[in-house]
Length: 611
Figure 1 (cartoon, helix red, strand yellow):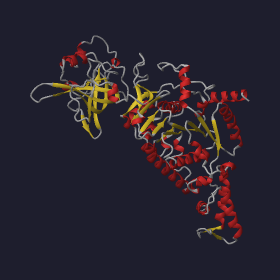
Figure 2 (cartoon, rainbow, N blue to C red):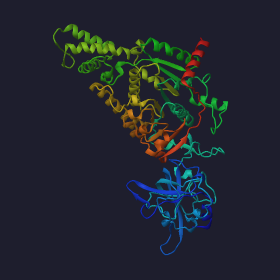
Figure 3 (tube, rainbow, N blue to C red):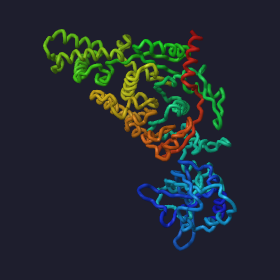
Figure 4 (tube, rainbow, N blue to C red):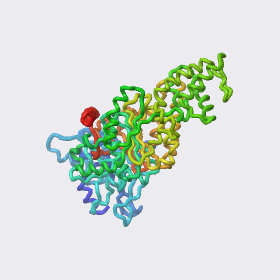
């Protein structure tokens, strides 16, 4: 070990190995774990669960010579506990090989009562880093092959390289990219590193080098999830203006992006970088053209509720489209089986058979054509059983009556636009738009929202080759890809099974065509496991520890996430170079955002003003 390195180590506050003959460091099936003790924890203000640490150790270059060479372990803190200096749990001096670190020295200097307690730092070691000869600041990564020795010392890595310090920096340990979307600033405490002098470490998400860009976001209400989603959309457009954005707006807050003139912008505070009016204007230009898609509904109250939104958007040159789903565009009539208002299990099969007959003769299987076909068969036959002429299958007369009732109930969800029924193109083709598209769903009930999102997933899969470089945001994803069928009926179970299959096909094949999914939820326990399986990048904001397990967040980090303030999150993105969870503090994006109560009041005031 060089003298300079030895001198440098005394400038750092270090923790010593905390092991003895009964509890040595080891590597087993649970990983490489170790414990270190620091006499005065106040001298290590960076101590925090999840924080990245660095351990300097040494190994001999030769068996005979005493020529030592420094190398490092990288890891993170998984536990912290205080111990009494008068009753230590372990006789750690048995493994202390450095006289300068004699643990009895502090006892000899005591001349009064203790004002602190030693802290034991439990760490999980992730890899070894060995310096590359002749290439300062570059290291070779390898798996942890042996436990740290008694020579080892734990400390916190520097934020940037220094000429007289050969150790890896925090950026080296976390493998932070130099290019990509800026998702926030790294920091394992309540503030990001470098906030004093504004020399932050930005977490870059390098989407250009990612094969799978699907991302899964979890956060409770008020965690800052919506602001994060808006900022992600902004960063995607900022990165490349050719990227298309489709945002589903379940609660109405995404639509604030349409109203830069009267919605409040996020005001940076504390460590947040300031934003001037020029930056706001640039952000608006980056989003480009906006298209607002508003589904039709037969609910007169909901229709009037959304009317003011449409008028305000049109006056701001937003391309507004009011469209209705067409029953004839469904892959199968049974996709709507959960909406049937009938207990007949044969009704869905009958409707499907008649729809197939219409399609084979070149007719659209619209609700009106299906109803007409069923009525004709009932009128022409008075027998208890009626045979379908196109395929020879017979059904009871009661099944035909049940099918008519089911089709009438579907009029609440489909075929509301007579003009759209006459067009050859699918109304969902309006989502093919070079800019930012917002699908407004706040005025719909849960069944209507589910059907719209189901059909959007199906349409995206069919159009995947044409929708390259598109990022589709699904909020409240647990509603469209639920863990279980809540209704309990067999028909609904089949519907959701097909939906999960459609989602899996879209997730697997869509990424080949650069069609990327951004899925967010505040109820991960209600989400099917297929979602996190298909989304290698995971973001966990403030969340209950019990729910965090469904996002695969490590247990000790879940308790930290439970106390997150707005905008803080853990991120894990293995293909972005960060297989370990990294704590990030979101930046305030230059986009409109205010509480929904304030937004609705201002929207109403502006609608009356512009009337």
